[in-house]
Image (cartoon, rainbow, N blue to C red; front, side, top):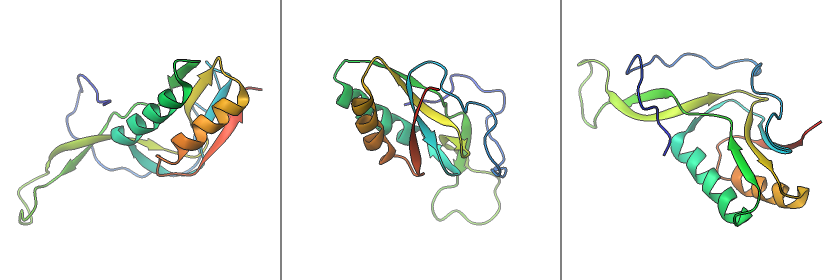
Length: 135
């Protein structure tokens, strides 16, 4: 699964995710894209599940680009740990996504194949998604 090899700071604050995405909103590499329509944290496991669904459906045809990378650490404290005692250890990594961000791109396949692959991948993600074509 995806996680950074090396990080400057091991733990990070939650932050607030609001507004629309300004970067990564156009299709750059492929011909078709899967666009985010909501705000959520997408975990590394969810990205991997969606990637595997697309790869299985394509059966060695076309090329897939993953346009997001989970580099935000999420911490959790153990069960039955009392209040205090500091911040918990890093549990997993997420990508805080906003509306308008291109998540995946596909090239080298026809539109119907790309549409179906992205429909299946969208079911694995916690947000609403939209199929987009290159202008």
